[in-house]
Structure formats: structure tokens, C-alpha cells
Length: 473
Image 1 (spheres, rainbow, N blue to C red):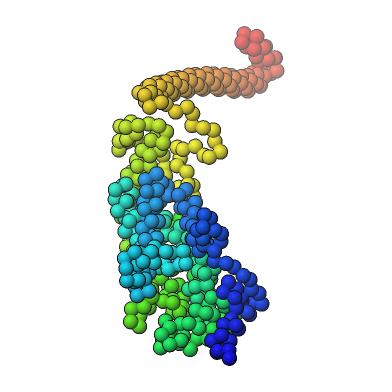
Image 2: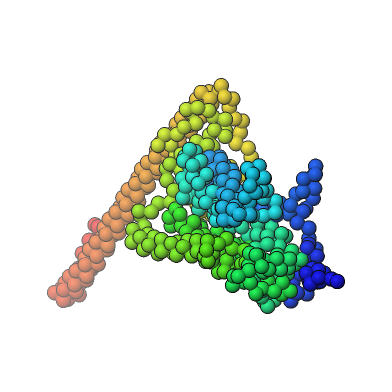
């Protein structure tokens, strides 16, 4: 006689089968990607590693935009990754200690460090990464707030991609749903069947009535899409940030809101009594972030000059330039900068390169000095600088002298033109006076001649006198 459980098992999908019933497609995927030297390499680890690599590829070239020296920050990033993995695992194990306590230290330790099948909690990872990263940032002189601002952008990338590891393992799913995107799978069906039986994780809870035959919420998909969308939005807004820590607060609000909603759908939440730990923590994070952002909005609006981004400070410029000089082979005290050294403008938020550094497509900087030739290196460039200053001085003096000569020539030309104009005006005035005088004399002679004719009876004496005057003239 076939038992009921055997019949149910026969009706279930194969463990590696995943289907989307309402969309009409499905496929098989083995959680083990391949085996090397007898060790099974899981897709879960590969996908998380891929997300981490893409996050690093995005974050490191943009650190200078936040005033962070990437050479110093690399230690904090490595430490943060390791701290995040340890923190995520310890957080998960602490919440499910009964599942990992095997009675002996050896067996318990093996169970705790075996993460190939999942068992990481994101909030534990964030806490672990911040603690370890904070310590290393203090040691390496890296400012924590701008460091967090740039790293949370990478975290959104890592979370958006890493959630697909849950998909391959058929874990972190939600309650039954009739949505078009509802999914199911052989492992999901077996997990629901076992959890709803007496003694199962869901027995006696609000989700005890779940049906293994029905699709469930693909919570991994919701969180993946939300994180990737958040990355696009927050990365865009980060270029307009007004104070250090603003990007971190935006991340906290964005992710906290999503996790609060999605956590309420999941069936595998870490619980303390009847409280979903991640859901309660998400609510607190969201509320605190929103309150702080409102306070900072009014403070920056009232007194914007009091908030200077670390990327625009002299300390940031000096540390980045010091690292650049060391990369060029300059050692010891020569790599250190004083407060008055100019190193270019780092405030351009749309350009990841420092103003004085060459672009990637430009020619090489030139031949770098050997470690023993540092003094000669600086003497050579000091001499070049002095020659350039002297040449500029000579050019300035020549330009002043040329301008002076042009001004004198222009003044002399203007003087000559004025004298010519005065002389011409004088000649015209004399001609006009003489012409007027002649005209008056002629009229006088005419009147005298007429008068003489009347007295002499027309003898012509007046005309003779007039002729004599004109001849005398």
C-alpha cells in the first residue's frame, strides 16, 4: 500500500525544477555549478562573488569624487568584505542556534562555517562590514561618512545581483500568490510541505495553511529589482549631495522601506517570539533615516556654508596627492605635502579624474625617477620652473614697452593732425577776412565814384581814382 506522503512526493516537481506557472515556462538548474578536486562549487557563491566584483569595479574609480584615496580605502574594503561575510553568518547562526548546535565543538564549528547552501543575513553582513571597516578606516586615515556614501552604492549592486543566489537555491520565497510572477519549484514544494507538518517551522504560525501546490511570491526578485532601481536613482542623486552621509541615509530609507514590505511576505524570517527581526529593524532604520534627512534638509537650507563636502577639503586633496606621488615612486618625506601646495581642483562631480593627472588615453607621464635620484628630479623641475617664470617676465616687459611705443606714436600723430587742422582753419579765416575786406572796399569805391560823378558832372574822375587804388593795391 502506497502511503499518502509517497503519493505527495510523486506529485511534486523534481528538486532542481523551477517553474513560473502563470507565465508558462520552467527549467532545471542544479545549485552545484561544478566540482573541482572533489569540492562542489555552488552557484550561490559564484553569484555573490560576481555581485561583489561588479560592486568593486563601480566603486573604486569613483572614490576620488567622494574625496577618498582608493589606495588607502582598499584595505577598508577588503576588511569590510571579510567582516561582512563573518557578520552575516554569525547573525544568521545566532538567530537559528538550535539548528547549528550539534553537541560537540567540532561538529558545531563545521556546521557554522558551511555557507555553501546559504544561511547569510544581510543585516548581519552590514553590521560586520561597518565594524571592521570603521576600525581600518581609523587606522588608514579614511573618513568614514564619505567612505560609506560610496560603498553603499556598491552594496546596492551586490544585493541586486546576489539575491539571484537565493533563486538558484529556491530559498527566501514568500507566501502563496496568484500574481503572474508567482513561482514554484521542487525544493520550494518540499520546504513548504515539511514546514507545515507537525513540528515544522511553519506549524502553528499564520503561514501554517500554505499549500505546496500553489505558486509563491518570488521575494528574491522583488528585492533584486528594488536594489538595482535604487542604485540607479541614488547614484544619480549622489552627484548632487549636499553633505557627507546623505547617500548613506538615502540607502537606509530606500532599502529599509523595501525590506519592511518584502519581509512580511517571507516564510523564513528570523524571529524573536512573534516579531520578525529584519522587519522590525527595517522599520526602525527607515524612520530614523527619514527623520535625520528632514533635519539635515532644513539645516543645510538655513546655513549651507557650514556644510562642506570632504571631497572639497584640503585634507582630502593632500592625502590623494600624497598617494599619487608615492605611486610615482617618490618616497619618504618628498611624498608629503605642506598646506600651501596646489594640487588641482577635485570638485568636479562629473569627472572621476583629478585635474593634474593624465587621462587614460593620454601619453605616459614621463620617465619616473629612481628612488636614489629624488633630489635631482626636483632640482631639474625647479630649474624648469624658474626658466618659465623668467621667460614670462621678459615677455611681459616686452609687451609693456611695445604698448608704450604705440601710445607715444598715437599721441604724436594726434598732435600733428591737430596742428594741421588749426593751420588750415587759420588760413580759411584769413581768406574769409580778406575777401570780406575787398568786398567792402569795392562797395565804398562804387559809392565814391557815384558821388564824384554827381559833383563833377560825370567827368570820370572817380573811375580814375578807383583804377589807381586797385593798381596800388
